[in-house]
Each structure stands twice: as C-alpha cells, then as structure tokens.
Length: 252
Image 1 (cartoon, rainbow, N blue to C red):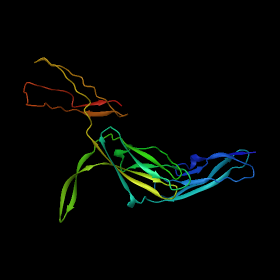
Image 2: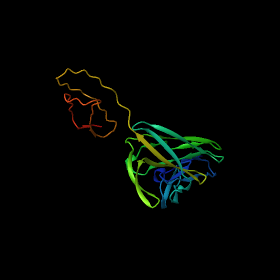
Image 3: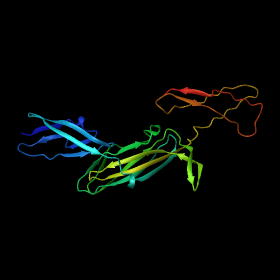
Image 4: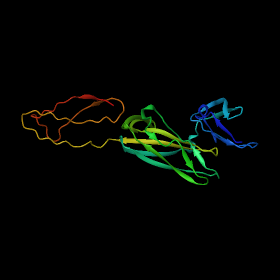
C-alpha cells in the first residue's frame, strides 16, 4: 500500500525548499525530490543537520542540507526609479523569463540600505513563471517620510566643491533563478511633499476671538508628535493675531 511521507520543513525553509514536501510513494518504487537552495544573505556555511522525513508506518529518513552563498554581483544590476508623493503608492513591474521546460517558483528578496526606509518597497513573496514563458513581478513603493536634499562634497578638477543632492530611499530586489543565475535590481525612491488635506473657510467677527478645530489624522500605527506653523498670505496686518500649539501628539 502507499506510504505517506512529510519533511520537517520548518527546520530548513529559510534557505532550502524540498519539492514535493509531502505526499505518497507507491510500494517498491522510487520518488525523485528536487532540493532548491535560496539563501537570503551571504553566508559561507549554511547547514541543517539530520533533517527528518517522517514516513507513516516506517522508519524516518534523515538528510543533511549544506550550502554556501556569496555577495551579489552588482556588475549587471539594473535600476528601478520611483517618484511619488509621501504616503502614496506607486508601482513598477519587471519581467522574469523562464528558459527551462519546467515551471519556476521563485522567492524574490527585497531589501533596503537602511532602517529609515524599511518596508517602503514591497512585493509578493513568491513569483510563479510558466515553463518557457514569462511573468511580471510588481514592486510597490509607499514612502512614509519625505526625501530631502543633502549637501555632499564632490571633486571638480583640482577643487572640492559642496553641492546639494537628493537623499533618495534606496533598496534592492533580488531574484535567485533555478537555472543558477540571478537578477538584481537597484531600487531608488523619491518622496515629494503631500497634497493638502483640504481647505477650511471661516467667517470671523472683528475684534472677537474664535477657536477653530483642525482635524489631524495619524497614518502610523504608533503615536506621533506633530509640529505646527502658519503664515498669513498677502500684506501683514498688525490687527490680526493667530495663536495655537506649536506641537501636539496624536495616538496611533
């Protein structure tokens, strides 16, 4: 009768995939399993010893998985450039071509160069590419902070000059392909000023104070402190006074 088997995938799924992970095997027959190595970072010694395969009604099997990963080759890196208003999403797609006669299931990796823009670039965890076909992978950029100009020093001839450059949000997109090659994209994002939340119109009687409540929404899951400022358009009026809190907290 058929025997049911299942690999203990929780032990190795971060860096390896065994396909099929579970199923049935006929009596007096062999079953071919495909092991895929997909490390998320450079590591000279990735090892999982004695990974068990549980077989119903029989003795378990054990397999040791070992691998070595190196830094990504940036010589063939392509670049994706994003521009949007802060807290608004923009997307771009890249095409992945399958050169083999079998379906690919790829696990892309998205990273950022710093924690200040962590989570701004996102995409699906798995991309399925049909045999001898292609598939589109969409990358979304949703910045939560604006990018700013920064002063940097550059060499122009014999002189060192100081210029202003945009400090963009930066990240990387990596596709480990089953044929042994890889695709690497550099992600560059620029976040501009947001749209105005709205317009308030009030009629005020001269020489009488009036309080105006302005709703402020916190888009974050954590509490934030907001700093407020205001300015009067047109010519200054010495009889006009505007007062309010310079800072206030809004819960997440």
